[in-house]
Image 1 (cartoon, rainbow, N blue to C red):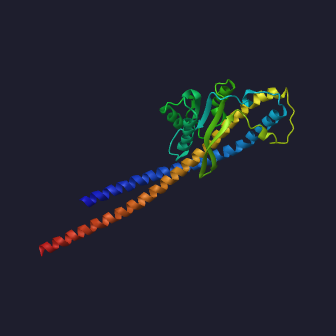
Image 2 (tube, one colour):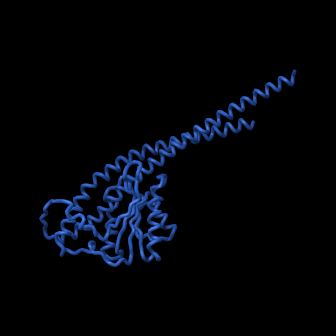
Image 3 (cartoon, rainbow, N blue to C red):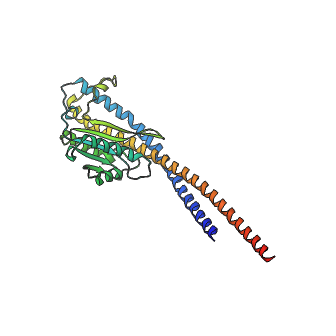
Length: 290
């Protein structure tokens, strides 16, 4: 009876593991499809980002008299951190990597919650900061798997305005940079102030004519440029998220296959032992009758 009970338990585990494997395999295929599309979205945004960067750099470097708060480095009294995470788990180290880095940075740089504020995309990051009593001034939850600019425009615009209004004196973004389907790198970049304009002065060789004037155009383009950097990081992060989830589900499927193989071996051994025990009992019964 004990052997039969053991056999039933093993069979139940095999069946439940097989069902789990079907789910993880399906999730892997869905994430692979989403990753391909997200990768295309991220790559297709690069030409626009590079062009606006070229124009902004050209104006900023050709007209030194054109002043703008976004180009001015000032004493840092308060830092803003823009953090991109996902709304769901089951994505391996996608969220934990970026959250660990931002948490360690804040612990090292700041003594008080008055010295920084956090703008966060994604429920996982939002709940992480809330549980630790860390100040979140703005957030957006339920971001689409394939976001467009309108999904992030309001948050990006408000974040840039915080810097212009001197509510924060610098802004750094934390996200996962998509390298390939199997490689995503936790990345941090300073977005504001825009101090790398000199590096991009020779980004392009085009000559521009400005109307009404360079300073007015800069006033419009600089916020758009900063917002485009945020959107580009979001697209990059989404491609990384789908890739990380695809890899996590593939690993889960492989682990399920290994477990099923081990359980099947145990099942066959237990079944063989049960048969051997029955044969021995029959032989013992025959011997007792003789």
